[in-house]
Length: 374
Image (tube, rainbow, N blue to C red):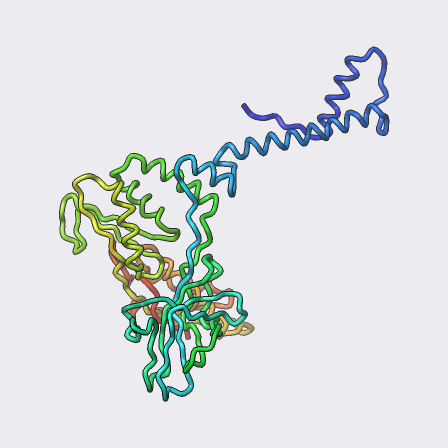
C-alpha cells in the first residue's frame, strides 16, 4: 500500500477540522491562540513520527537502503560489498652518477609531488634486475635507471595519477637520486557503489541456476571490481574445438593480470561450473596500438595543450576497451575531435602505420602503445 504523506499545514488543518467538528461552539484557532499552538505542536510530533516511518521503510528494501543498511540487507543473502582496488603502475628510479651499485628494496615508498598519494615498490620476479636474495631491484655499476612496479598504499580511485606526478622518494635510497612515472598509474577503484551492489545482487539471483554462462560470469565479477572477461565455449585455449571445454579470458585493466588473480578466478568458477567440464582461466593476448595523427587548431588556441588533451583521450579510450573489443580506425579521429574544442581538423590518422581496424579476437585486448600527435 502506498504511504500517504502529509505536510505540516495539512496535519494542522486536519486536526483543526476534527477539533471544531467535535465542539459545540466556535473555537479560537487563529494564529497565536493556545489551541492553535497545541495543534501545531502535535503536528510537529506527527511529522517526526512520519519521518521515522519513512526511515524504517527505506532500510527494509534493497532498492532504497544505502551504505551500511544495504550491506546488512545483502548479508542476509551471503553477499558482501566488493572492496576498493589499489592502483598500480611502473616508476623509474634514476641517479646522476652510476659509478657504484645500488639497490631499490621492496617496500620503498614514493609519493606524488604534492605528497597526497603514496606508492610502495612491489615484487616482479620477471624483472631482469630482480634479486630474490636482496629482496629488491639491483642497479649495477654503469646502469643509470631502472623501472620497477609500484602499488598505491591506499586503495581507491585516488591512486590513479597522471604520468610525471610521482617525483618524491619518501626515504633516502643510497645511490638513487630521482623517481618519476612515465605512464599513469591505473586500476584504482573505490569500494563498490550502492547501485553496483544492487546490480550484482540481480546477477547473483540469476547465477543460482548454476552451470550457465551467467553463473560463471557472476563468479568472475565477484572476485574483484573492474574485471573484464569473455567466455569461449567448446574450445581450448589454442582455439581448437573441444566439447565440454571453455576458456575464460580476464583482464584487470592492465593487460597482464597477476597469477594470483587468475587463481582466484579459477577458484571462484569451480563451484558453479558444469559437471564433467574442463576449463582454463587465462590472461588476454595484448595487441599494442601505436597511434599517430596530425591536428589543426584554432588561431587563438594553444596547440601543445590540444596535443596533450588528444593524446590523453586516445590513450584512455584504448586502455579502457574490454576484452575482445576491436579498435576501429575511424574511432581515433572521433576521439581526437571530442578531446578538445580547439581541434578544428584531424588528418593522417594511422593505427600501427595503417588505416585498418585492430581486431584482437575473443581472447585478446587492445592496449595503447605510442600515441604521437603533431
